[in-house]
Image (cartoon, each protein chain N blue to C red):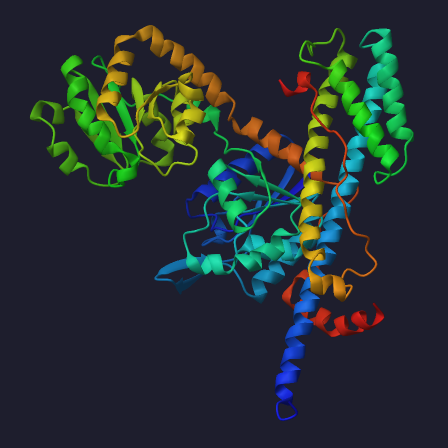
Length: 396
Length: 178
């Protein structure tokens, strides 16, 4: 199949949606499909061959924040040209919020269109007021996908209608063979925490409070913290001998993530809320590190209610320390979780997820037809339509 | 009123713009329904084709094979997807498939031909479920606009017939849902 994918966010600035599009494009290519990605980019020179740039996004200031958007006649022209030249069997737009490249692509195309919803839309009031605009584009979309139940809820609330839930994929291969950092996990075993240190909902405080009780039982246990922010005030609340067991790496590169996850005897996810999926849990499981996580709905689902990892009561440090001590004392149970975790993570391998998405493509496309440019959907097209409409009304 | 000709003109302009937008939306929605229906039809025809082929490989006992072949033939022989007979035939085929591939069935077949046919059938049944759902979504979106008073009064949809959902059973056989 020839597939055109539209990513509304700048390709060369790290982000969830562009990472998803990147991994999907690679997986589709590996499965033998032809993929072309249309995305804004800060620097056109560094783009991979399958990415077509619409140029630099413009920074627009509203609501006190700066949004980087692609619009204007030049962009519109590039979008239609890309669609015309692409001869795609299916057009796949991501995060079709107004005013984005994805909405522009919907307006300019006719034929099988698939749209994927990634996150909540309620971040900006301005975007919300433009949802009506997006709605006219959504009406052309044949199939809707949401990456999580939270994304599905947002879609239902703001646009209406239904969607299939197909989760994010994980590049299992690159995590399966991860080597731990030098000297980790070590004889005395270790715990790993990954995430923003200064974001309370990531729950580092819950873990720090549980640490002394675990150290009482396992005095040589170490804690590896990786993520931006300064944890010194949290570490300062520990007894001196416990504080000595804590290592803070700061922000780590994406390429080091697998090694950090592999460096723990256990991976701890003490998040207290705000998680819609929990991809890092799957990544930890893929490296072979058993997971202990708070019993958020999303985590419980990823860990199959405790079959693929251990759950503790959200926000409860005593419950966390009890769970960690139980696992550290029981190598058989750890081994069981490693095996179950591997199997669980494999279900989210990009190849499997991409195959599910391909099935959606297959169910909307019609053999022998391609996605065509739709001039009537564009602004100029609208103006020309305006002139002929009164005549049409007379006839009817 | 005559002292405000601009008021009349601008009201008319806004009205015309609004109506043209609505007409454009309807046009797009009808197009989407057409595409969805064509896709669904393709998948249903292929499903019946695979079932007929599978029946001819004697994948099941003779009675099951005869019933499968007959149901597949009925579905292929019936008319367009909008005909009641066709929808009934597709429902019947779904039911027969559900009975043939119930949860007790082990999908590992004895030979390669059957193996690949069953894998293909499982895939196509999933596509039927999805494209049926997408068609229903499209019809629902379209009806929302077509039921608006202004749209009906001014015949903005033109001669396009009122779309409706294609009511037939598409349940995935248990053996495929595992």
